[in-house]
Length: 467
Image (cartoon, rainbow, N blue to C red; front, side):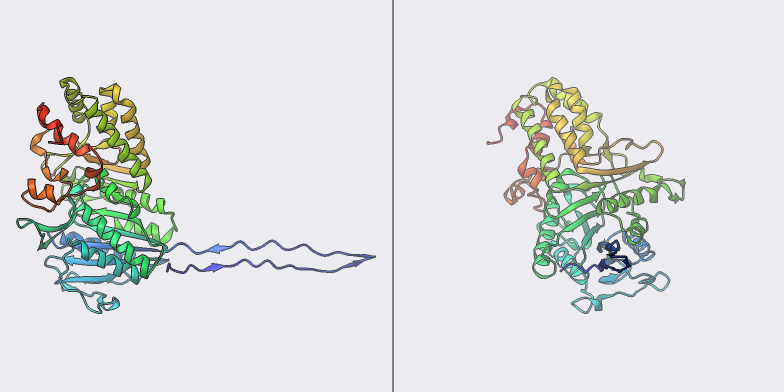
């Protein structure tokens, strides 16, 4: 059941007084009722802190940030911590106010595993395993039921390719790749957790906010996969620097200001941007080599469904309207892509992720016959992106963004065949590894066919998908 909120019930008292004035008795009317005072809604914030890799130092820094605020005023903060070398095994931490778990000088970590059902630390957990994510979410939210739930997936991220790379474990079905949560696996695991929590803890349970403290996950592919397991999502279209989110900033807002859900999301975004705007690096004030930092707060559910329907309608028209067979239209599509902010790596290369809203806007300008469909995509993006903020270092590229990206490239060099593996048969037939397949976005739209076809240099045979 949900956490109980204290309420002060207003009791109206009818005060009467009788005064005899001649033959009249005057009775006072009822006094005004006292205003009801309603306690703030409770939150449980669970950070799935996968630092079992080269980010482990940053994991400890973020732990200290959380501890600087602590659980209070109806907000409970829980961490499942996994590191590579700092602490052996995986540990539960309840972030109480004024309590420190890690001593950097001695290297001692005091955990709270005895508070949880296992009554001991769970050993070395593969945090790239979906079944472990299910177990962790059920365990954390069973410990602290609340009115609202936030889950933060903390680690390396690869956009549609996944999140939470655990260097101590290898992924099944690959040639030695490290374990990670793929996009379909993440959503399926959180759906399984929802089913269990609705049975045993809170029949109305649903994630309020799913957060990615990881690179590149503000993609329509990721939002669409998660559309039914959370109300909102925060993530970046760009690379996330090692220090990650500004935890102290948004947790202070949550514990001090009784914000609404959307105010929480805005606080997450703004605290992240303020963290990097105020960062002083070895090279001076600013972002050093990070370049550009951006974060988006997205609305899931029906708004994402509508946006994906609009994207599919656009790609159907691109195929059926002959836009891929005419070189002039292909040139216009490439021109729209070239004028759309793309996502750089730390080495300066451009990844095959582009800003969805700005690409649709530019495509409608280049090909007016498609403008009604591209306008629908732009409007859909505006519905999904509740709030976005960013800061840019000198010479940075993210000067304007719609807040959500999509996989697209004009270069065959950047094509990842796994993007359009719709089932395990495709993965086994075309892929060297069978890790990636089955994203709802590629199954339910023609966008993946559009990306593949566009890079095939005028070979009309690729348009015959049935063969």
